[in-house]
Amino acid sequence: MPFRKPSPFTALLTGFVMLPVLVASSFAVFAEPPAGVVGYACHDHRALVLLAYDGAKNRKGWAAFGGHGEKDERIADTAAREFREETRCAFEAPLADQLQGQPRSVIGPFYSYVWQVPFVDAEQIEKSRCGTPGERNQFIWVSAADLAHAVRITGQIKAVQAAKDKNPDRNYPLWFAGRIALQQAMQDGLLPVDDSVCQ
Image (cartoon, rainbow, N blue to C red; front, side, top):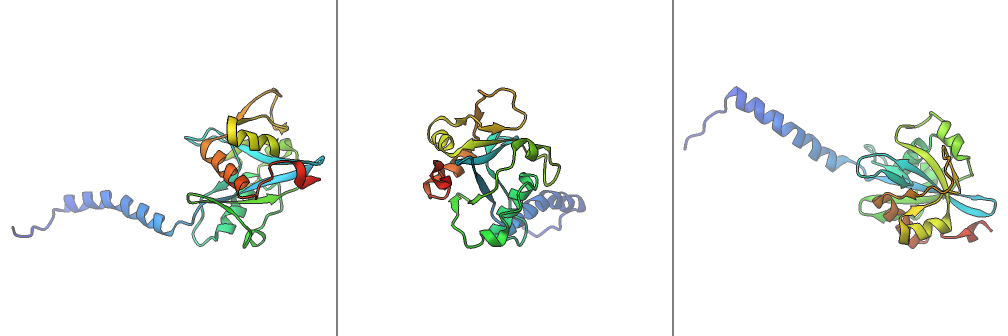
């Protein structure tokens, strides 16, 4: 069968169909892996872990912080940037150079670091407009021991301190992948499971 040159309409239609495929595939090749930080603080001799609500589709629950890498970022760069943005610039550390070379947990393509931060009131974090305030909200501090129980068994947790919370008996559901990342950080011995780290 002889080769027939495609009509201009066919060539244009093919371009519209193929362009998104090429863009998506090139992004997949060059995108850096997602990463984040689980921040915990020692407050009144208790180990508390900071979580926030993630309202993205298929999440709708509480977890730690992280997101996709940007072009040419190291994993530590991504983790530090995402933590700073999503916690509304409440913490001066960790910086990427502090995370570089530190142990980290891995679940699928996601890397988690754990870092001790100073305790900052959940309401104060909530009020800040720095970073990416639309991504995470309803910040809560939870005890490490309660979180360890929640990731293993219940999937829900009560807060030690919460922003905008008028119901002290409220349960906070962990979203699935965030729960698994926290559990892995505990299994890897990076995230405290009790108050002993603060004694």
